[in-house]
Image (cartoon, rainbow, N blue to C red):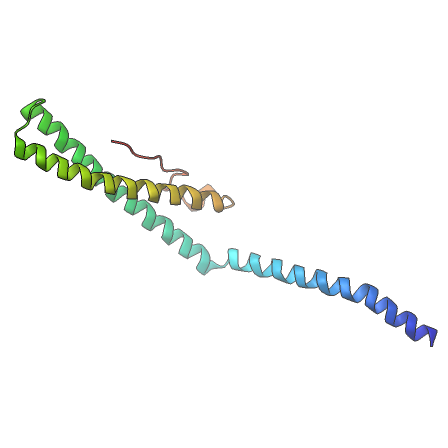
Length: 136
């Protein structure tokens, strides 16, 4: 009888913590499997491509506005006609929205690249580690 009680006690002492450790190890293995799943890696890579392209597109828009502003200053000096000033003000308010969106995308990119810092640089060869903020 004491052998059975001792066996049951030993099973409880070893079994319960063993189940806990096994459950914890199983969850950890599941997370690792999800992180290195080829579909997950491809989705992340595609996300970085989309973010990078969106930032580049908005940079082109901002640079076009800067060149328009410079050309206007060259052509009219400090006192452009009223309609040109009005157009510039409308464009400036639009550009501020584009600038805010562009810097938000850059922040998301920087945040995401820091989260996956285990990815070797060779996997993302044409993406910078960080996109700086843009200002007019």
